[in-house]
Length: 77
Image (cartoon, rainbow, N blue to C red; front, side):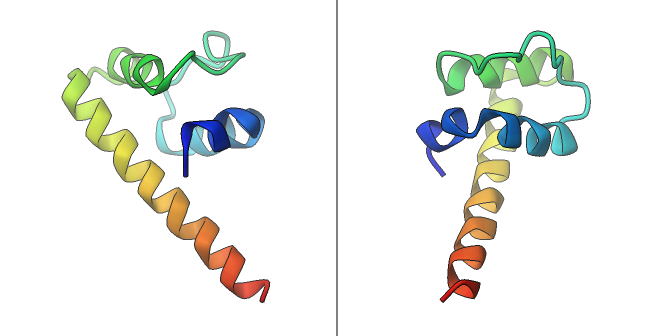
């Protein structure tokens, strides 16, 4: 899953992000951040993580979202 995928489907992505990162500020994320770094920093601040920890957590989330998307693609065929 790419940053473009996330921003093009921001409402859905934000709902999934909130499930994984429940302390996110919906007001601050009304619009997607400019880049993945901005989202990483927001996660770090709201969840009391270092930037590295937040980056790793977000990378894991992206990986699992990609797997879920691939699973949906396979089941449709």
